[in-house]
Amino acid sequence: MAWCVAYGVLSGIAAALLVPVVADLASGDRDAIGAHLLTLAIVTAAAGVVRYVQTMRGSAAALQTLSTMHQRLGDHLVSLPLGWFDSDRTGRLSRVATDGTMMITGIFAHLLAPLIIAVAGPATVTVALFWYDWRLGLAAALSIPVLALAFRFGAASVASGEARNHIADVEAATRVIEFGRNQWVLRAFGRSAHGYRPLQEAIEEQRRTRRRTLGHGVVGLSVGGLAVQLAVTALMLACVRLALDGAVAPAAAVALIALAFRFAGRGRRSCATSRSPCRPAR
Picture 1: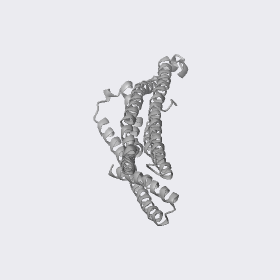
Picture 2: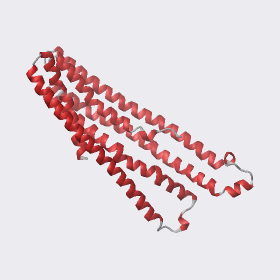
Picture 3: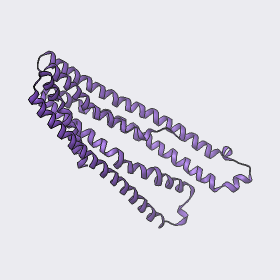
Picture 4: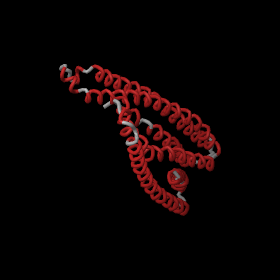
């Protein structure tokens, strides 16, 4: 987590350093632009190193978590009585041992780092905007609660849909195991997979549930995307107004607008990260 925070801060600083570079280019100040470019290069190189270390540590944590969960799950299963393994519980077990463990592992491998960086990066950019002009910083700070509420709504939509998916997936897995165990009875009565109604109904319900979940997830993500666009628009209007009033140079205003996109870009990617649970049925 510390490496994720460090990368988010460094990436925000690198984005903020683009403003003086653009201003120096517009003014033709070669001495100042050299110093700013050197600082930008050092910060960018440091961010690359930190990103590499953070990625490697996240992958190692994910593999360790997966190994530990499988080991603990196996140790627990051998202590259970044989009567525990009925069709319903076996279906739940297969769901936990596959999708459940991989979902938890994905937190360390794919989800935790983007979420932390999505907070540290914009926070650093907000501080930089306050440094350049307090009005821009204030506009960015006021947009943070709006973005947080929008992303919270999107996350809640995805989470509720994932809970419904879990119930439908467990039911389908249970029926598949039941279908396999009762093959001798089904074949004796000439029943194939297409003639086993409980399995057909479970698979159809799984498909319907995932489609509903996908629709709800799209709504939640659309709300988050709209909030990001509104935040970017507000910051752009503030930059344009400052440029028209002469508070900042036009070239610096262009760079500040790019910085505003950087502020909201992390939030957009953070919102997109939550789309993975809303995958369509296979």
